[in-house]
Length: 250
Image (tube, rainbow, N blue to C red; front, side, top):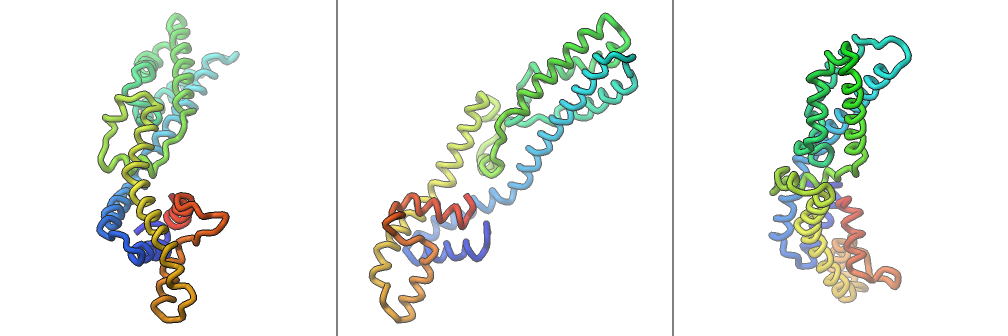
């Protein structure tokens, strides 16, 4: 299932004991399980894109150093770095890093690969080559400084949505869309189930507390995963968030 099995089983049992519609819970659980099955792939894809972007920036930075150094330019070293940039081309593409639609960065990258090897030997073109390298470093740096996307939210987004929807949006709105879908379609349903269960648990505890029969004891044990209402923590919403945070790590 998800999280720690014993804790999530306790939550499931507590929801059932307080009258939650378990068909509703199972529907939510299926979504969560599907999300988890692709979580590692989504996380790895983003991390690999970032690693490739960082390596491309390192290569470009090294080329800049070789071009601007006081000693004779090491042409062989630059050619090897250009070969590595070729290897990395498009491997850093990710809608939350470098968008495929980023024409400025990709055209700069293409230009460097197309005439870089010849420009090293041609003083007239070498300055243009150096300028393109500087532009690439700046553009990659801007993208690598972006806020990292939450892979758990993005994995849920990909259940029913695609990169095409993200590509049409400005960077900030991409985050907002992923966050909104995660909140509305994933968090809100389970949080509502837990909040409703907490209301019922608050009402039913009084009826069972003080009884020594097995049924009462078993019921109180089953719903013990739900924090009791106290003077300092009577808010149902806050207690529901606490339950989800501790049990499902969300």
